Every structure is written in C-alpha cells, then in structure tokens.
Length: 393
Image (cartoon, rainbow, N blue to C red; front, side, top):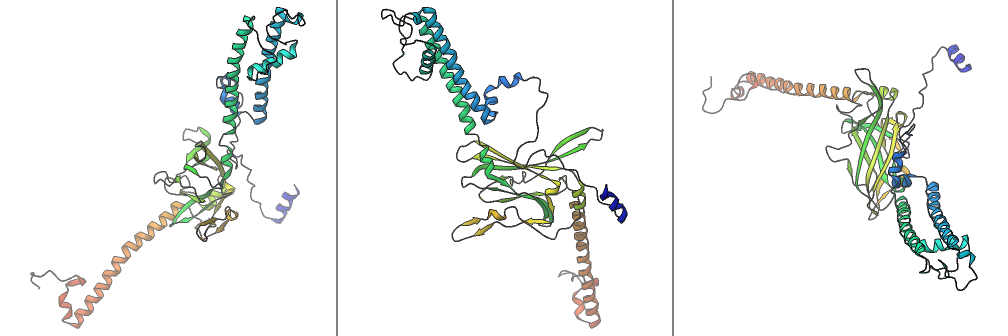
C-alpha cells in the first residue's frame, strides 16, 4: 500500500506485474500434470507389470521384499499345517515314525524349509519323504509358483534398473531460447548437447507451442498444442548429436510467431516445449529428454556463444559457455513486417535499375547524335542497331 501511495505521489504509473505462469513441463523434463479423480482404478491392475515399474524406488523395493517374504510365510504355514495334521509334531522322538518332512519340528523349521524349497537351496537337513503325497503336491506347486514370482519380480527390477530415464539427464538444453536474424530472416533458436561420449542414435528434435486459445465459436481450449517447425520438411530435425547443436525455427508465414513483434512477444503468455528423442547407443533403448521455455526465457536480439574450438587433432567443446548468449543487432518488428519491408525494397530495386539503365542509354544516344557520325550505329532512344540485312532509314 505504501508503494502504491508513493507511486501516485510521484505521478507515474508502474507497469503491471506479470503473474508467474505455471509450467506445463519443468526444465528437467518432468510433466507438471497430476491425474485426479480416477474412478476406474482397476485399469492399473490390468497392467500390473507397468504399474510396478512406474512405482517409486522405495515402493518397488518394499513390494519386492513383501512378494518373497509373504510367499515364504504362506507356504511355510501350509508345511506346518501338514505336519500338524499328520501328527508329525507329536512323534518327534519316535524313530519308527515316518514324517512328511524330516527334522521339521515347528513353524520356524517349516518356514526355513519353505525358503529352501522356493530358492532351491536344499541344505539337506530337512527333506521331504515319499510317504507324504500331499507334501509332494505342495512341493510341485511351490516350485512352479516360486519360479513365476522370481521371473516376475526379477523382470520388474531389471526393467526398472535399465530404464533410459537417467540417460536423459546427460542430454542438456540451453537455459534460454533466443530470437535473432539468420540469413536475413527472424529465427527462434535453442541449443542442445550431449555430455556423454556414447552417442544418441537416430536422434530427432521436436518443438511444441503451448498456449491457450479461443475458437471462433467461443470454445476455450486450455494448453493448446501447436507444432513449431524445426526442419521436418528438410530433414534438419534429425540430428547427428556429437557436439552441441543450435536448433532453429524459422519464423515464416506458417509460424505462430509470424505477426509477433518484440513488444508483442514480451506481453504474450506461452510455453515452448522441446523434445529430444533417440536410441541409447549402449543399450538400444529409446530415450526421451524434455525441457521448456517460458516467455521470460526467450531473449530477443541474442545469439549463442560458440562452444566448439579446434585443438591439436580434435575438436573441443567448452560446456562452460553452453548457456551463454550475447546481444546482436535485431529489428524489433515482427517477421511479417520485416518480410514486407524486404519485398518493398526488392520491388523498388527491381524497377529502379532498368529505369536508370534506360536513362543512361538515352543520355549516351543524345550525346552521340550531337557529335555526328557515331550515332548512326544506334537507333532512336538508345536502342541497339537493327540486324544486318535491314535497310537503314
């Protein structure tokens, strides 16, 4: 309140503050979207394998331990019930009695025998006898189910460990995007790089403009996605990512920034999401890295600092300058106004050059006519002489 009073007393108005936009995609690639009010939760159980893989590590490890521990306890309890039902626990000192499992004298022994059976350890102290058909059936059942549990849980852990998500952490994007001239045309540019020596195979880049819009019928579309061309038609979107590359989006008539000037761009509210995809050379698995740029992270009139230098027999990349930019002369008008101005200059140049040539030829013709004799080789108005064989007037 005191600041407002001070501003009114000074007679100047402060510009309105831009409210911070909520990111759709974080800078590290995490999508800032949460699924709420999902009533059909059974769908997660229909794809239990993917559900377990997507769990956090602490939950995955907890489920991994519980899957084995509960299986051992369940079958251990059944082994104890068989021994209790047959009376084996009452004839522990009877050498003439043939139990279902030798040396099974309580629940702890039954639990240990369950572990030995499912993990195929077989220490030899506790062993099943041939006088227990129900024990033989339970042994087969536990061996089969134990193999299934092993395959399922080991598969989940292997897939979770080998996920290429961490590989995306070594794929870096520039902290800012820039707008400047390239070959006389305004371009929106950002830089990507790979920190590892093992490369991304078949790398490709995409860019999306996230901006809410309203249709002609009045329908409001939040977070509408629009493609930004980064060379799909020319093949420039397929990258050989050995050293950092500057990805360029040419602001042409098909671009959503065609009519955006510097001032209009600063007042706009949008987010640019960039997606880098490719296969990890070491594992062959598909990897995707994402990042985004808000309006405040787009620098008009800047260019990226070069990071590549030629050393003795090799090229060196200086990642200390990866995010650095510097200012360059750039018009503040929109790409459309720049193209129209260039077209008018081209048209003026196209018509002015022939007229100047005609004036020069006419002046030469008049001068030669006044001198006499020399002007006979040319016609009127400075035209070239008629071809041979035609009569001269």
